[in-house]
Image (tube, rainbow, N blue to C red; front, side):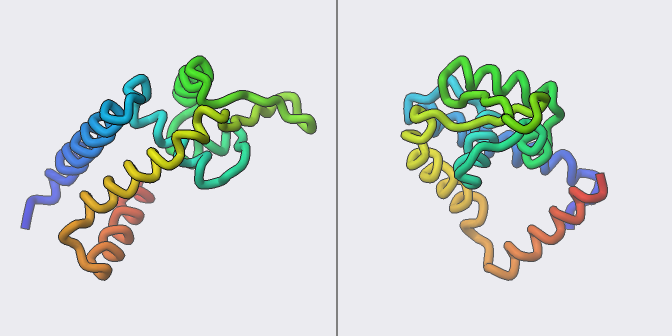
Length: 142
């Protein structure tokens, strides 16, 4: 068994490899102006199928509001998302997908499927479930 002290290093290495795969697939798909952190936002909006408040996006992808603002600014500048002020609360801003982003959804789904297939290619269902349980527990420790 590997020493537990190396778990953070292993997680970092896994993230690095996953990000490399995403960037490689973005390049193949001619969407190299995006980063994996942008993909997290777009995938979340694809899954919800609706507009989301900035605060909710930040919480769901584990980013603080200032970091999310920078990411959303770039997605907005590249015309993947639009900001819409809430009619009920002028302090709240919603983020919605543009047609440009909606048109990319099949490509994002392909890349997401590739990520999952690559990550779990040698795992049984039981192993996947156990890993998810342990990762959730680890995440909640922070």
